[in-house]
Image (cartoon, rainbow, N blue to C red; front, side, top):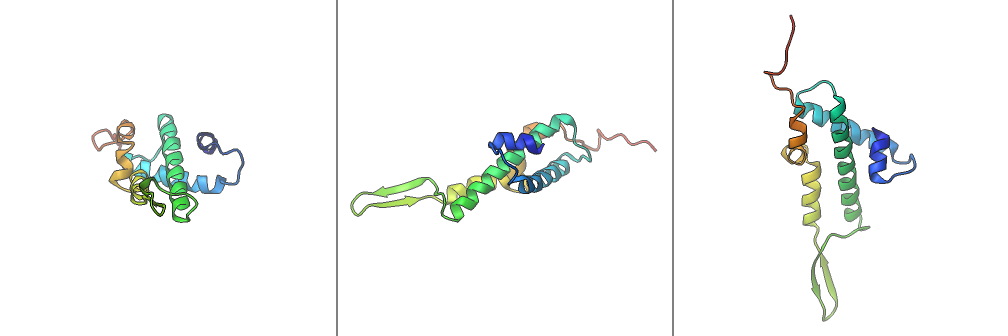
Length: 127
C-alpha cells in the first residue's frame, strides 16, 4: 500500500516512508472503526490508499501554511500602498474537512465506505 500511496503523491525516495506508514495505520483504524470490521477486504485497500494520500496532502499543506512556506488564497488586494491579504481560514476549513476524525472524515468517503460496512444484521456468528 505504501508504494501505491507514494505513486499518488509522486514521492520517489524513501524519506517519507515512516510518516506515510503512520498515516496509513491511522486511516486503516478509522476505516475499520467506521465499517465495524476487523479485516480489510481487497476492494477497500485502494480506498484506504486514496484517503491516506489525501490526508498526507492536507496535513503537509497545512504545515506549510502555518510555517509561512505557503500562503492561502488571496482575500484582498489594495493598490495604493501595495497591500495583499491572504485567507487562512479556508485552508484550515479544507484541512479539517479532509482530516477530521469524525463526521467530516467519513463524509468525504461515505458512499465508498458504506459498501463495506458491516451491520449487526450482516454479521453471522456461529456458536
